[in-house]
Length: 254
Image (cartoon, rainbow, N blue to C red):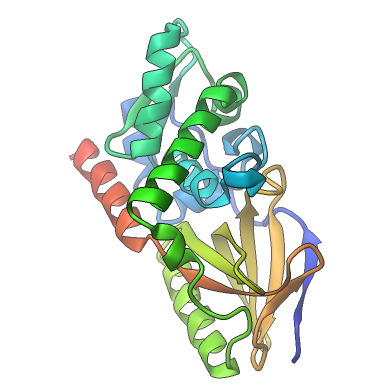
């Protein structure tokens, strides 16, 4: 088995920085940029302030950390010119981001990192509640543990080609990562570049939220490899959730 080794922790760096929206006009103007959401997640100020931790039996909340992060990238506006809200209102804002059902104005904060740092206990409570609901009520954990950590080279190539096509449309793509055994992780893919014989992937991993990680895929590979995870394979998911978020943003501006 030929494994793909983690190449480096690095920012994509070649793209123009995305501005953090401070009004509805800012927000709607930025929607015209195809890769706006990918670029905004390159910015440290729009990353979650704390890494993945907690969860059931201490196994973390990586799936929900990533989904909450994506909701915030697509659906939040920051109003530092306004007074910070009451504790009750802050709890409501956290829940609204988690639900991902509308565009949300966050008063008193300049960016998502500030907001998530000051309110992380409430965010963590919501992530763990989300995990329990998905796991115990909807049994989504079964879906998350389906698949193999090592795939055929043909299946891996198909996954990478489809992922590249989706990232070229500007999507921030959620993927579950099947690790050997019954363990599954998640990341957000915020960009890809073609190489001579494959692709470079740029991802936001909830275990390392303060840096963009680069993984390299070469045709013929059957998995990725990282010393902390071993061999693993990615599976794109939650596209219906992403499509709903994009429709909400579009409706808000139209």
